[in-house]
Length: 143
Image (cartoon, rainbow, N blue to C red; front, top):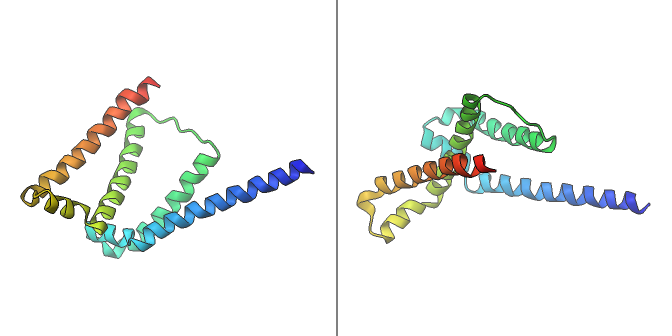
């Protein structure tokens, strides 16, 4: 009897935590207008439904892959392509978020770097790329 109650409690806590995280993700995307801002950056407002569906289906797909502990064995170029797509999505999401919050213009104004804002953005981009590649080639290969 206690084992059954324990299982029921674990199921309730797990579903509650998943619901809280899912609601937080949806609130993040909805309140900050991430999808419309991404469309505005891309200049493809007519494809907004496809992007919304892609985000939802991607979240569902990767959640299922995580839950069922599915492993893919790609050849190196295939793994690189998947990593490139994931990196593009993460980068575009971060770009949309910073666009919404106007982080870079405020930072440039406070540091008096308005004239080199483009170079500042490129430094962030290339720094992120270099850091990701360093993490992948050094830390991930050692473990």
